[in-house]
Length: 502
Image 1 (cartoon, helix red, strand yellow):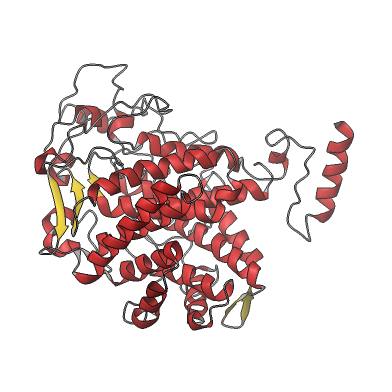
Image 2: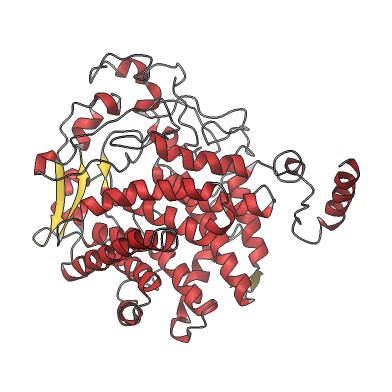
């Protein structure tokens, strides 16, 4: 072993400057590769998926690993005589918001579609995280031309600081239908179901068909009854998950996923006919739970790059425009002094993770097509895109001015006072008695570390000067969310594989 380790070391050092790290298979996955990889991406991948167990609502399964959580929301939906038990709490509160939950599901599924082949033992955990969401989305779309888009009253929920297991705030149910349309939330839900159908295609074909059939029906509803869900439900969903970008991006995104999932030419035709009016060429370069244009452009560029579909040639240009907007040195790209991509002060890390995933995915497509990106005369190679993405993920995992990992439970130093009710209050096992609505605020306002480690949770992240106070009340920087983690799963799978940790 000593000789093979030495020879492999020599080999790696000799090629490091000219090529990517080559896996040296005489190494065991954990014990040696951290000499070359900056981080244990495999460990971070495991934790990034485990986080979703801490966000589960409903009846928890026997194999629940986040053991400080218990069952919650077991009568969800009863206010409208429907079964809406299950799904995820989006962040640090106890509301089930359908719009970000659907986007989370789409991105978790896309992570598996692109990088599931290299996830090894984590693939099953990723599938379970997706299924926890899709089982719920199937319930939320059980009635034709209706989607139940929220359980819980956000204003009343936020007025309490209590564990999900103790919830006694109203579990009000809100829906969109023909009379109060929601093309944005409906098309995103269709995208989620369609993307997830690809994840289960081989392992559970019956479930996969159920998902794709529902996706077709839900997209039809989204397209036929046009309107933004935050028009009819403004006082309910705003300012939390208001659809600021409109619904055009979701229609393009939903049609793109249905094209991938069904191969039915009607979706490709829909994209060709409606792409421009749905904003395909817009210059909006922020990809997250609200605006999906970037994701649709990248996915559609694959049809041109990899599948040689000439009619979608323009999407390569649209995708390149986004890439050029985030490459360091571009006039649009804003980075902190420590090198973190900075888009917004509120929960900026969601844009870091989504952009990192997009860069790695687009690099994959470009490599297959033997193509590059041209940014105003500067050639940007797939290798460069991967390096940018790696640098962002490395910052998130602790290579930053504060030497702080922004993933809870990863590394030697990470946020201890995250804005998360269940994590901050004593667990049911430790404190079986109910903690009343306002009683929890003494904990919320305290400086004591959270007693329950929400393993894998990625918080909103530092400010634009790389500062992070680690204060529980500072939700802009200290709150985790499902849609921060979802694209990170794919990025970490890629990095773990490329450094032979998987």
